[in-house]
Length: 180
Length: 69
Image (cartoon, rainbow over all chains, first blue to last red; front, top):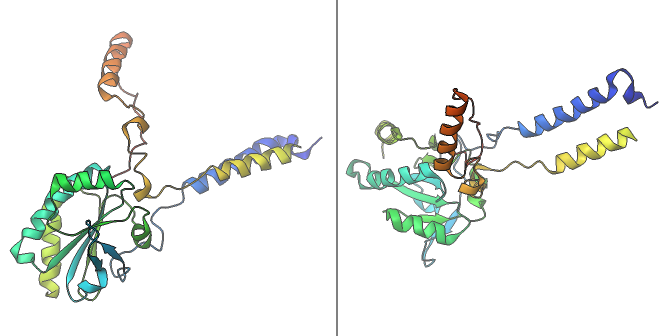
């Protein structure tokens, strides 16, 4: 008889198989490669929505940049857009540039969302998730405040109802502390 | 034979596992992908069920959706 049948061998083998499945499924999304506070923000370039202008993250060097990853299918992103419009209107934080990167696969959905919120900041389209992969974005939405030296100062995951006020204050405090 | 079967099961099962990154969850966020694609009909069914059973709760499950927040 096959030794696996003896002494509950089958159950031991099945348990091993299930353990391997559990290990694969529990692999953390937030890996070591994720961009965190203190990391150098990965460089990327993108075209404006009308595809007439090429923008480069590096061109914001020396300025503060708020990089936001969003998608039209993500309900919290719809809450963050009006807030980002407020942020871009804040005269005290006029030195903060906002770049919103859509990870939508369909351009139509992305454009519809953009038309709904009329953002006052540049929007990039990343249908294949190339920029999102560079940042190893851990949640939707995720935003990064990048300092004038290109180092990430703040990472914010998700966007809940009351996040806006606190986040605005956090950004203001960081910029006041470090200077524009 | 059993070893071969278990090995096949392990390999085929492992091939079926894929981690979906947060930015790739557009399809998972669709209504038809949720456990309850029609929340209104679901609420009505739950009401009828609870009336018949004289008990409520314990029917929900986590999971599905875009995983936002």
